[in-house]
Image 1: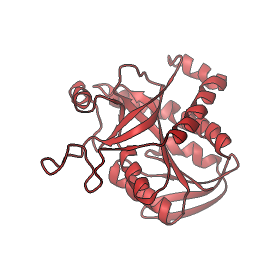
Image 2: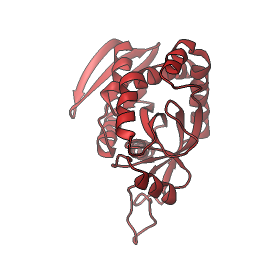
Image 3: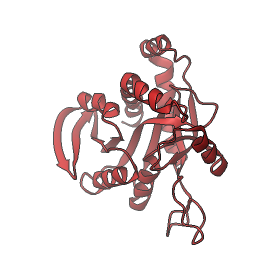
Image 4: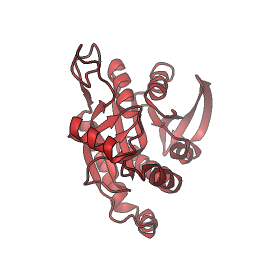
Length: 248
């Protein structure tokens, strides 16, 4: 099996890429793909860049050129649910594109010609990643100690719906509008829904795992940058290590 690993920011991907051994580097479409072994698993890892279009083109190339068997998208997100705090982990259950609106031609959020307003992740995929995140939160005591020193205590995991769109949710007004329109959504980001659409088109399994970096409010840009620089890569790498141990 060949696992595709995507993240939208270099800070989220750099440590993952450094851990890959027997690397082969391929450049396509302004992206650099790193193929090799990560914790004994054959992988292709890539920094996709921000936004739905960038993520979709990257995912398409992973599928068509590298023939990956599944894709994991990892990185940060803003909390929409009041249950979530910085440092918590969300596993996507359904992926919405909150900026898709072709009314009155079709329902709001419906992806044209699909009849779908969201992409649902198979339960088995969710359960595997849930176990990986659980193992990470339970066993990585050294990292938990570092988090506690940074005032991130008792991080938890939540399985829930994720909203993707080419908008950085960074105000209470934007956040409340998202809650009103998509009340089941627990966090927001800018890529997962697009990658899920590509994977659905090609029949490739996907799992989206997000770490909460901010509260999607007026302080979001400050919190997100600080969290990404300090912790995002360690979260992603540690979760992937546990995940790969379960799928090998």
